[in-house]
Amino acid sequence: MTHRTEASEPFPPVRPGQLAHMHAAVIGWYRDSARALPWREPEASPWSILVCEVMSQQTPVVRVLPRWREWMGRWPRPSDLAEAPSADVLIAWDTLGYPRRALRLQETARAIAERHGDRVPETEEELRALPGVGDYTAAAVTSFAHRQRTTVLDVNVRRVLGRAVAGLEHRPSSVSKRERAWAETLVPAREHVEWNAGLMELGALVCTARNPSCEECPLAQMCAWRSAGKPAHPTSVKRTQAWAGTDRQLRGAIMRSLREASAASGAVAASAVAAEASSEHAGGSGAAAVPVRLLESPASALSAAEAEFLDALPAPVRAAVLAVRELDAGGERTSRLIADLVADGLAQRTDGALHLPV
Image (cartoon, rainbow, N blue to C red; front, side, top):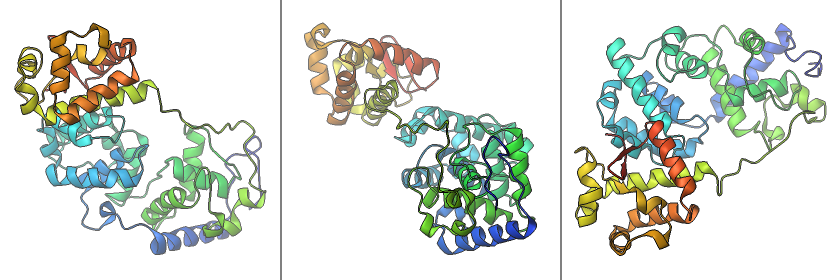
């Protein structure tokens, strides 16, 4: 293939013979080297594949797998998840990150149960009409669950195609109509599921963003980017996303305190302070609440009773609350993020106490 710059032709055509070679290389590699994952088994249900796709967004498979197994054991059908308490859903989501995905997935489950008789729709159009389902998820479910020919474009697929065909280190963050139309011309008429899955797996395991293992890549000999000396994109700036000290870290810590309180609801409710400012306001859901003052008030502002209550909390709850306090000793950011969590539907505040949604 001839190397072209993004400025001249970011979506170069591929000759039929070269494309057939690419198809054979990627599909053959996938069959020999793909990870054995339960959602790839023939008996995997469309619902289990949809759950996997939502969980896997910006989350490594190694973290998704145990959560996915637990979810499918508890909620094997959309209607099962639709009927679950939202607090249980957020607890089961655990530390996958971006917990709004959990609530959106529950909204998706309700729509499938109510509109489609508990069956995951088969067309991209119907899937995109579901709450929380975008272009990528709709295409992935259509391909992997229903084995229809479509174009699946996640960050890994886009990286592999951009490097191998166009000689580009990285694509822009958003998918354009031109890129989607171009990628569609590369999808084979047969074995398209293996092609889509193979490109994703290749980008996840070999053609990675930072340290690609070109010596292991089945496309190495035909890769335009490699043959051009792996040029860096002139506008590409590699950054490591900050975590320590960020609002995202603090939001996660607040959510963890609510999950731990819910898991230890009996012990929390046993306290007289909890009876006044915690469990009795949790709506009978079994999700204990955490007094907001314990999360956001400086140590000097806590009363003796509050300090005693904090010390008496079950160890996991106390550790989670203290983690919030350590991340924001003054409490200003915590107050703002609590308001954001309530606005996002991830928490509820009742009479000075914070708890998972009922």
